[in-house]
Length: 274
Ligand code: MG
Image 1 (cartoon, rainbow, N blue to C red):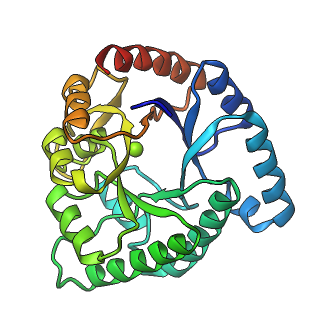
Image 2: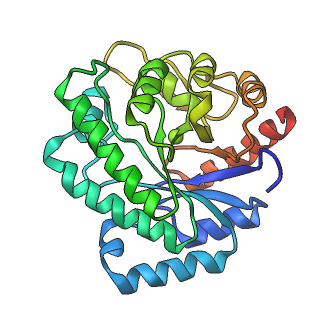
């Protein structure tokens, strides 16, 4: 791949027709949300989906884990439902993530990523220790599949994330840096954050958004260039830290046709900045 190739995040619920459409728009790489849990559990459905994806002829750079029951309605709901923080769901979700890692390996993909959930910043908090152990297990499983396990940014400050990564002490754990999430969760100024976790960044999202209106609330996502990230500063910072991977545009709206228009416009903006 050329330097800083522009790709697309195929969010949960994506279809093969949409994947072909993205290819036909001229994109040669995507990240994909993993297959649904029932497909992952069904060996025939799983194998058929892998064949169908491979037939499209587009590079899959990362498979994203996600779980039924997750909700991003507001920050307390995210804490309760997203990722591996809730102990009542942890073991089952680790098991599903292992199936996702196997699914990614069958596709020839060397990165598995997830929103792991809020990690308590206090290292003495019992949930902090549980999350360290959980991510180590996932990293070690992915490692046996020849993969990096990547943490999506946004739900903690960059310095807390860096401390967590250092505590993990695993060389196959990386960061999927999403500048908009830093804003949407009110976790810190994104360009400065990128500098703090730069050593760990293995993939990035190009996404934009505006700061939350109040505490406990989430900010709002906007098309690239219309939010508070500053795409020019983001691209300049990626060059400064010598990032060489894909820039994967993420647009989290349900209307596919509008999303396609925003992706095409976003690509024009990114190409002008790269
Ligand atoms: Mg993202």
